[in-house]
Length: 289
Image 1 (cartoon, rainbow, N blue to C red):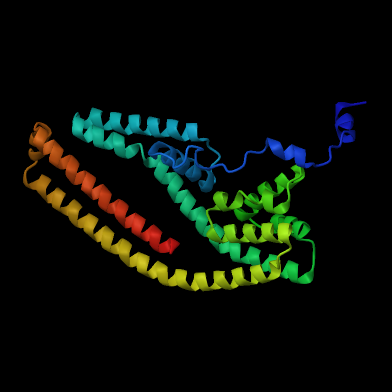
Image 2 (tube, helix red, strand yellow):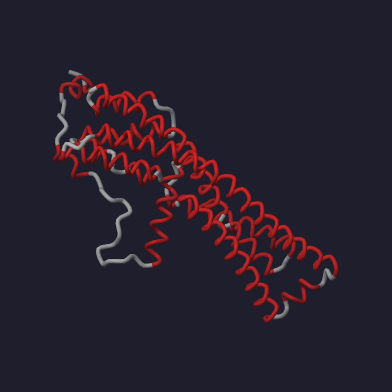
């Protein structure tokens, strides 16, 4: 008897006891209470890795940040020999892999937002027809394209370990970053545990998604204006710096030789970065609202 035939005969039925090997609440707060700054940064970084859809681990991403920083910082030092420019290039280039992951997460979330209403509509038709939800969910996941289809299929594998459908889908809100997914999973859990009317919940969710899509179009127009104003301010600041350097090319060397000038330059850069951060946070809060 070959090993393959032996494995085929050893069939293990799914059971709740196998679900103990899964780790729940990936981003749960520490038992001590409110997480500190380091823990919040660590959780935000893990969430960025997960929601970007990358196959790289967090350790690999951190190594990439270090390598990119050393490469760009070393290149700037070799060409210009200026410690201030080297420090700025090293710090800025270290964030390049993080920025790439943030862009990928934004694109992936946009794609998920476009696919999610169709998922809700298909589930609504399934519940109205009286078909079994778990079987229909597997069929929908098999037909759904990436990235939503990949997340659904990955979540449904947890049912093979004996978890219910609601518990198996519990990681989807964190994995996708969609607020509507949290509502969907909560409705499925409520229906499984207490026999709630899933059709009514899905109908309300579908109407909410249609209304949100209408508001999102208006929000994109407003956000575009905000970004245009921010880019204009940044370009004006860059123009002022460029004119300052052209008028007196030796000014940068004198600035590097003075601690007070370096402190003022660092303060100006910090204020500029803080302004851009406030602009990004304002746009994010507006999108969340």
